[in-house]
Length: 261
Image (cartoon, rainbow, N blue to C red; front, side, top):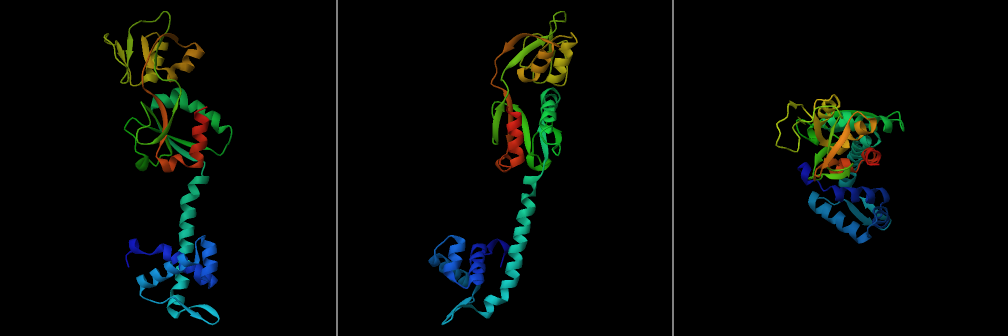
């Protein structure tokens, strides 16, 4: 019989009935009716082509055919339990792999992770840059941060303000600092850098004014490194995202709660 055709539910019912030698007590354990147990046993017998139980004046008894497979069946269920525990071990893990844009990690995320780790010294983080795209399976990610209009195909929650701010210094150049996510403009930048974080740093040196996500510039504005010269509305914002299985993990829920405060 092919593995994909194994009657696992029927085998589970057979195991319970064999342990109790009673359809009624097996039904109580499985939270079903005795009639449902009887139906599962008959269907399993039809599938296997053997009789598994006989009724005697003393009660229910296993047939030799039923007894023949019972030890290996129970060993198999124990292996299933071990496999499930191994798969669930990640729930208790305190290591998280997080994908985020490089500038977001440097300007915002790293500081929040440092603060979150103060609540539990066993927490461990691995940061992966999303410059080359986002693949949860290939990178074995727990959570990702994307700059978009929404979470896309994943579960997600928005963090921080949307929109852009224009930053620079009072006596610096007034021309734009360009970067790949720059929202546009007619003036050709005299300086172009790799990302918004570097654009903020360039603006802080007086090399021009950078139009960057408001969330990334907040700390530099608060510290007085740059001054806000204006804002631009945008539907884009930062999102914490993950596929549903990762999103349900306890460790991911804890991190999402910490980052979305």
